Image (cartoon, rainbow, N blue to C red; front, side, top):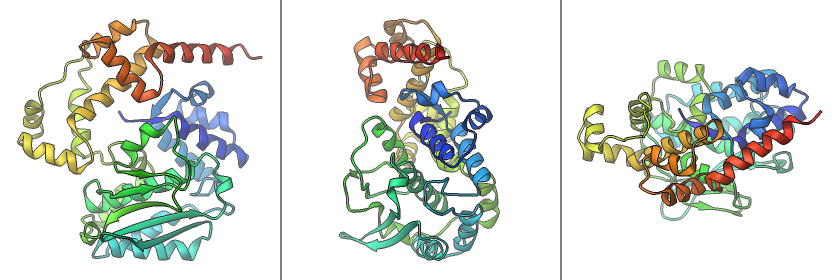
Length: 346
């Protein structure tokens, strides 16, 4: 089960509220609460976030979710992807997609621009960035296009660099390494995905039949990490998670490779292509279980470190701080204090 930072839930809700939607009803529809989304340490299921975005799209009739001056009618993205699916390369598909959007909106400007070292940047500029003060739409739109390109290519697209036209975020920066596995540049002239041009000469491997299925569950494919439910990262996670016995024990990589049906060296190469690794998958599983246990359980930090397979408490605390920006003890105290403060309000 992949998860997403509360930041993205919170900002999607705030955008909906600015447009007059009933935020409490939206939260109830996805099974989340105001307490959760206002807690910077909370993580929700990516399926919940996808459902929230879908509801906002439908309620507003706006694929830009209220973060632009004018709405982008529902169905625009699907129409554009149908229009590029038969192009003979990823670059030609992107070129055509940029032209399509240039015809239908002035609120988000997209450009394909060549760079140094045989790179090609997909640039994105919001006409009114003040309508997106927490950069929700910037990151959502980048994620949509990065994951669409990856889906068209049949594998996670390698990025040369990702640039952002704003300051480096503090709380959610950890999220970026899953959303955009690449080198980052902040306070750049423009927000962009930078690809090696050779990669974009690859053909589109998806069919119209697959596209129909892909769009039928949109935007879930843009929220989940890893991108593709058929990715090797997801297969490995699904192999490990159903057991969920504690203390947590991970099988040897060679055993995992055999279960997937390939050699260890080949599986490592596949994971690298997806921007993942077995170690990263294990840490993500530990993170999600740790947060769940801290919020809902009464284990000590030392007990939890042992249950999650850490050899010492310090190693667990260090890892947890990297995930959330807080120590496990502070995270638990913060969450319980936050809940208490909100619950007692009249």
